[in-house]
Length: 550
Image (tube, rainbow, N blue to C red; front, side):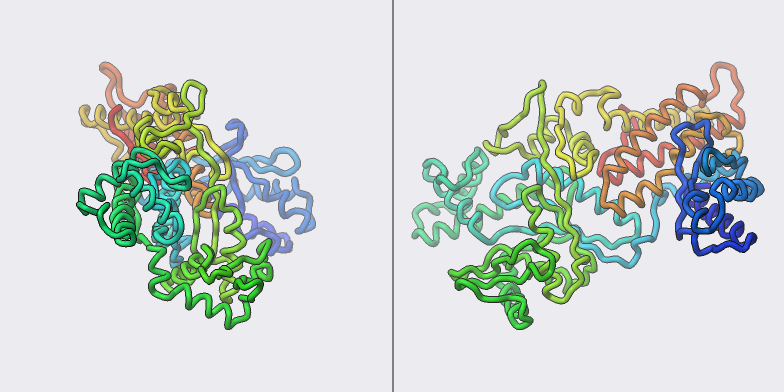
């Protein structure tokens, strides 16, 4: 019996108890919460439903809890239900009901934890979208890890997710990048507002290799040559780096296409005709304060050029025209103002602002020997994705970036995350999977497995702890999807690994010496197989490998 099964049983039981006493059944929430108590001695699960609804139903909470306890104790799968304090209900499952969790995992395998709560939803998930003017820095790297994990998690709940990269190939930063390449090709210092670093020198050389004589071209043609080839080379590097990091996109959308296709002009005219753009001081302004933004935004500047938000507005319309009913934007800490302006833009088009969801990620810092690492070997000014992977590897890099809420700034201790010890969270989780894989190999050598196990034999406290932790996985994944918080999966995996290690220390899994294999060995092997599967499923959601040997 999973926590969800127990919550459903509890709801039905509570509805029946209230009805039998002519009390208002409508006071029951649609879903009831059951949680694992902090102290395992209090039971397998606990609920405060009696205290939630007693006052509304016109009864004493402890009295209602007593009625519920009596009804639950008579239900299949419940060993006991006891009232505690002012009306808490502590519930213990029967051994066979707990064993059903193991059976569910072994029956569903990689599908365990999946649900259909987001079935029918089409989600556009835009993340990273780093400017093609340099390698991906740490902020973009965080979004690469978190965004990819979130996409996987949303998909498990039935959503159709499109991962999209917004390719910023329009605007002043591309001009600065181009001038930096030309300066490097001429052996000159980077322009004051340009880009520096070894990668600029390398790309400039590659442009000249593809277009010999580029420096001898007329100025406009020279600029266009270095721009087009240089941007393509830089973006190819970005794509390659992301792929090696385990992150690929379904769509690479070019910002420039919005201007070339006339989409920006069309969006501006639509807003003008609706009265949601007004002219002041020679510029066109979006009435974004009418839709909850903190100030109105310039869309067309007084010089006639489009402001950056003009592309954002057209881009949102393009996403909606492609049938997405939710557009999630994952942006850096310096983009907080985008929340109001993007929602206001949606509302200005007569759309639901809730079709826009903006996540803001905080800063990432690298630490070595207690000191901040500030300079990149290649980029010259910022730490890049490549730097992080070179220091600690892909698995540790992804896990370290996903493990904390994006609302928090994080410090990544390079020595810690490169270490092979239990203090390294990703090593701790992966080692649990490797240990379980070793047990499975050793059992196979003995001709043993968990097939046909009598799971009701799993009555040891440590077995119960492990089963209940495994049973929490679907709820953790569902909550991670609902709140857009992949770090919940990482923290859960650490809890599962710890619970497994404690079980391993307390319960002998394989027969020793001349001991004959028995039903308990078989049941414990089934439990191990379930734990291994859930660890693999969870690591897969984070894009982290589940090694069989370490």
